[in-house]
Image 1 (cartoon, rainbow, N blue to C red):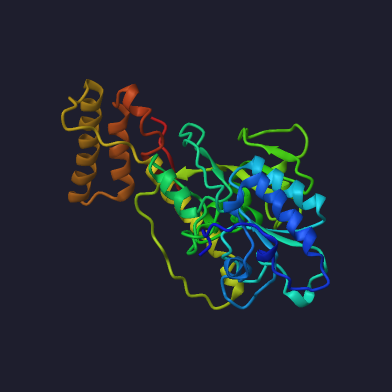
Image 2 (spheres, rainbow, N blue to C red):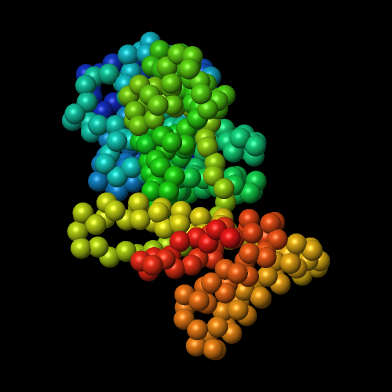
Length: 361
């Protein structure tokens, strides 16, 4: 099992290449043990195997040590030791990738340098949800499921979600700029990172977790490190954006004839949603049954009845539509000023050309 406590000795260091110095690997293992403890420096081949195989089982690599730090300071100490011993580093998150990017190279493709897998799963801390800013700070080893549950406990939600949420981690999602099932609505992981903390190869800690919308001091680390896939630095924590929690959602299956139609679907959906929202905004609120009608509202309803009665009586007498409009217009001439302003141009009379223009009283 991966949690097995292993004492680091020269006998436990595998010798996959006879000509590679075991002393170097032993010294490195001792340095890592001093930095993060013997419980989290894994060397036996059977213990390392789970970290050397990707999610699909198609890609299998070869390493010498698996290190499991639990904080940014410990990640810094691990990378410093690896640099001093000229070791190659593979930063690994949830190891849910499908293309072998989170495992080391096979033994036949390696050089003589030691290979260390740095597992980020123990960096799983979660800060308090800032409901005002709609942000939260999460460790790189936090799974997407814990991030989502933590946000929902505060009445919010996460903008990124996908099937591997129970194993995939925040750090891996940032490093690969993951999208998921909500990408059309909220964007990829790049749009969700408002602050980031990482460690470079020499052990330097970079970034900021302030979460300021506009931070112009120096490089914008979230933009630089998101999608970098571990090539620039090892991500340890991130300040992440949250979104409102929708109580109900709709999933639509849209059949298209080709890729050309697919490009217009997201825009059509947004336009439709915007039109519906506009209609809701334009609809006046319904007065409560307990609200007593004001004097002006009573006058308005009285005028509307008179105007309607004039049109009905004109129709009953066989009067033309043009005269019926004039009857309605004459009723509007006696409309109180406050009520007139509520229906500007709503009463029209016909012109000789047959077009309608607003009646001006």
